Length: 105
Figure 1 (cartoon, rainbow, N blue to C red):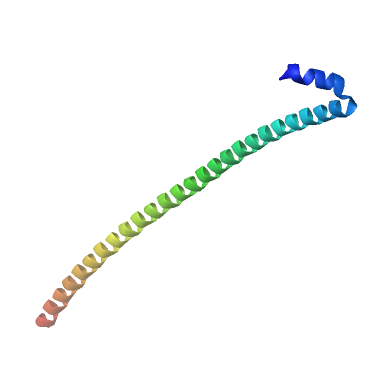
Figure 2: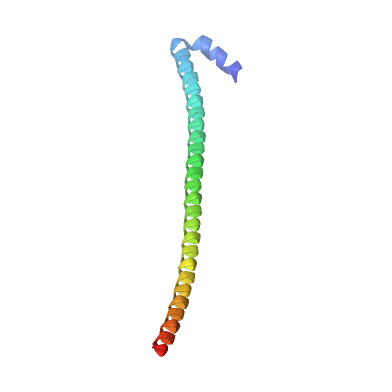
C-alpha cells in the first residue's frame, strides 16, 4: 500500500500531502481517543466495584449489628421471664405466709 501512496504523495502536490497529513492525524487522534475511552471505562468499572464493595461492607455491618441487637433483646426477654417467675414464686410464698399468720391470729 505504501508503494502506491508514495508516487501519489510525490506527484499529488501540496493538497494531497495535506490530506494524507490530516488522515494520519485523524487516525492517531482516534487511536488516542479509543485508548482514553478504554482507560475511562476501566476506571469507572474499578470505581463501581469499589463502591459496591463499600455498600456490601455497610450492609454486612448493619446485618451484624441487627443480629447482635436481636440476641440482646432475646436475652433480656429471657431474664425478664425468669424474673417474673421468681416474683410469682415470691408472691406465692408471701401469700402462704400471710394465710398461716391469719389462721394463727
